[in-house]
Length: 259
Image 1: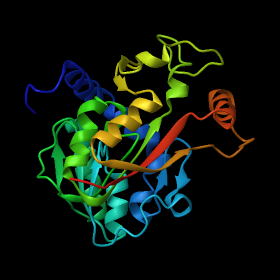
Image 2: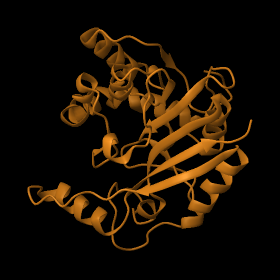
Image 3: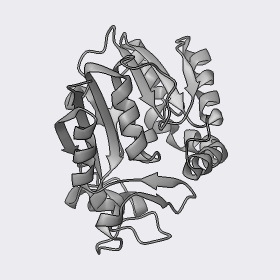
């Protein structure tokens, strides 16, 4: 990684190396199984790709996962016939990816790099995607142009992300949404999270103008909503109830229309 990237990149790399083991252990019940079945699910609420149909048929397609973590998604797509590449900022996350490759016997390239400066030629991929991956932590004004650059014309960029509405209800020092506006909407850019990571977001209009400037057309914006689950309790129940009233995350589906 060059010095072109900012201090937030170094902060996030160090922090992800610190929390990687705990993250993989905590999320294993939710995401590990898809690497063995190929049945992938999107976002905070585990909405099946088979229902959302973000990708369609991936067989034979070159796919880049931006912020692959333990590569559960990429492994699942390899099972479905894709040719994936996993990219992550954190070497510890990539170590988890290598371990999963040994367990499944499915191997594909893994690259350590920032989403703001990816080491691939123009037009390398049919699909670039992230499920709460790199686009949640990279400066979108650098990462989106890079994603567009390495996509082929007609290629798909898809990523899940915390919604701007959610962000502006989170008070400083907290990691939970409230029911009052707590942050300036028009100042959304890069900001420190309660867990020590630096996150990124933009107002909706800025996202759209950024996409258009990179030759990306918006095909869909899904504002996900969890199913009511009466078995949840405590914080999980509270988060579920909030997200059933207001969108806590969104999934952008974009098509590259020009070079």
